[in-house]
Image (tube, rainbow, N blue to C red; front, side):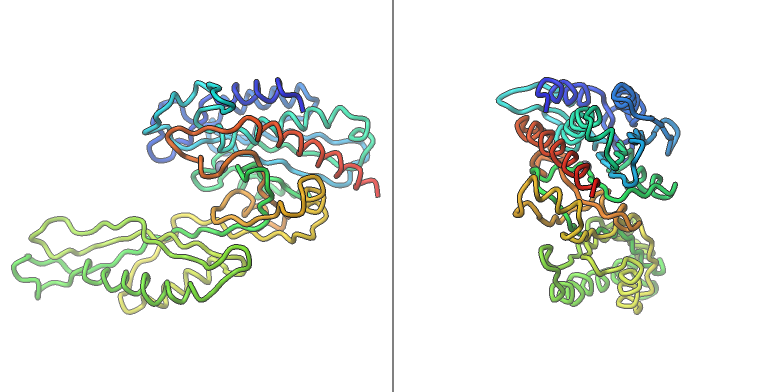
Length: 380
Ligand SMILES: [Zn+2]
């Protein structure tokens, strides 16, 4: 690991805004275009074949391929480039100021720390003799749009990209997330019949129906979910995050809607979950629409690449996570994947986001050792 290179990379990356434009980004400088150019240049300097592929106009994935002559297997490193909004931040989001061993700024922990560590590790590994003579290719995939729908990784796997293993960069405290929950976000609307508020018996209240829907979801349905359980991850959950309905105090409401955040565990399929919810709510004839989904992740801890990671980090490094990330999409497409990266996940999306520099340096070191060990194992 090259300490100076890692820190310079991280500062440069934080200083280039790459805010996801979805929702209220809090700045006019959105999108991954500019940071993609920086990463592409770095990868080219390391000798990669680099492609910048637009997923949306001006919002590309960057793919840098390092392919030794005898390569018969490939590993993908996939940190995302976008960050969440800078709205409400209490520090300068793009200063990359270093204080007390921490580097501050939007994206520092989620997930430019991983990006910097992986870039440093790759640049060192690909100039070794072992890499040039080995059988393992490396695909560095800097992905767009993770924060708003995993759009970058979806586009990549739908193009037919199929490495043998993928390491997604997310702040896991340098531990290995081999299983995480999925997320299924759905909107449920109830419909009624409007009438004057002084004669509610002439109408049908959509809010009244929704009250029944909510009672069912947070009562018996949530209790049924608590009875299920996955090893490591615990039970699936349901949360109602948004409610909207009615227009005026003196009008019987004709429409009410809620957003449901259903967190799933491995073995639950999202089409089945939607069917299960619609069956339970059938009496209220709601309209059900999916807003977003990311499947749960489960990668066999006995996978040879996971073994390789464990051999450099330690057997107790395998953990599960309640959140979801691009690893779920790789895994859904048959690519064994884990999330692994520096930093404390609870700092994600916070008003004073920072990352501990020692974590980033340690990650660069671990990633370098892991890649070298994977190259050696590919000889066999
Ligand atoms: Zn992230």
